[in-house]
Length: 100
Image (tube, rainbow, N blue to C red; front, side):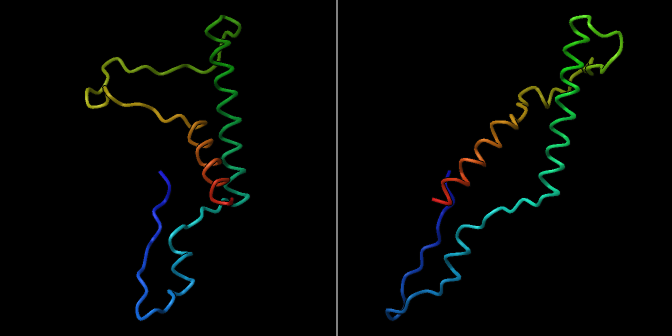
């Protein structure tokens, strides 16, 4: 949902300071180091997935081992993992919409 904007009624016909408009829509800033860390984790995870797929099809004798709990926690039965690609897409589109 879009960020809610603060609305102030004018007192004695005076305009609110411009600072209030800036407070209503804070913008996230990503540093070069942040993007580099995200890229590193993403690329490393892609390698793990490829190796895992290869070990499932019998292409590799050794590789990553997928952990599966023998006794799953009942409190997590409705857990839904986040789709990071979808989340990043939503963040990207929100950033574009805020700029226009």
